[in-house]
Length: 459
Image 1: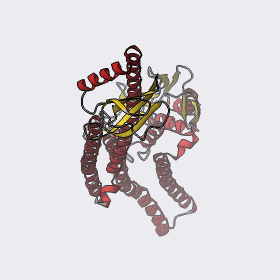
Image 2 (image 1 turned 30 degrees about the horizontal axis):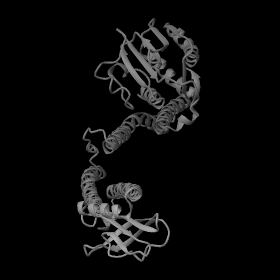
Image 3 (image 1 turned 30 degrees about the vertical axis):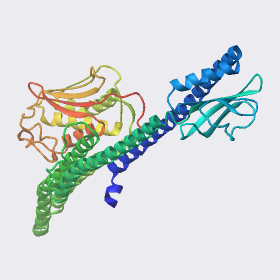
Image 4 (image 1 turned 180 degrees about the horizontal axis):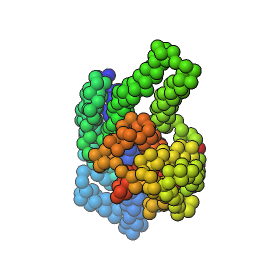
């Protein structure tokens, strides 16, 4: 029972139920007040009209005529509905349906609600109007206050029935809502338990109804997809690190072991040491790239976002690589449609463009061509494109090239560790964009598409 009361759906449903009951009772109270005021005012108006009519009869026909008129009216009315009494100056009854003048009636004209005993022998709660006629005659005109009592009882019973029905339906609805919500929550608990047990492929059930729980399930499923990708990425990275570091470390050990065993001359020794330093530098570059990727994955660099012109960043990177392209005899060009403001980290954007150009320089043949272009798309997004006429990337390898340490067949003989495009992809995702790899026929067109900016810094 305590679990039922503490259930959120039951609490919300009962809260709305109590609110509905309070509104119903408030409406009933206002209606009851308006009913009583209206009925009481109507009764007084009727009594005054009756008294005025009888006073007119008295003025025309005198006491005898009024006596006959009252007796005639009493024979026509429903027993107990109307009270009439005409007395002389000594309060002796002349006509009417009361045996005597009621003692509860005070002196002076006005309306009074009292219990009176009519000639029919039953006490009646009556609203009486006292009028003094010429000659010191006294007239009482009254109406039964209990005439509308059956209707009022029906109203009270109807209100009670409505409250009871609303309460029963509200409680039943709360229980049904709780059962439905608990069924969906239980499905979520089962899925989460399976995920905690190691089954990362499980996802929360989503009915597609678009309600709050369905939206929550879809959001959590997106988070689980991202977590699964990260876990698989960590697993792949661990395997790749073990594989890619084994070669330079083995070479380093081999060189040092050879130097230890052969004891060569100073020149050969220093040459071996330089080769060993190169192997160590390669390992350090791998770890530096992995640390940069870890930093990008956490989103920590978003705090450094400022308003930056993507065209200017790309132009500076192109200027830096122009000597290397000239030395290789590569036609190196840059095109821009003008200022392309984006909100981002200028250092990371420059590194991403550098990685794309560096990949092209490694793959493009001598006397080849590389084109760097910055465009604004129709939707307002900014595309930084690096296109070359090298061997390109096979269609089967395009989904894999952003994986860490992946190297396709075309890049086996080129220097690098397979982290360049991974960093570019991470930078694009950090800025809310995407890395697109397209065919250039021949070659590759790598586009880093960044979302539209509102012209303000993201700080």
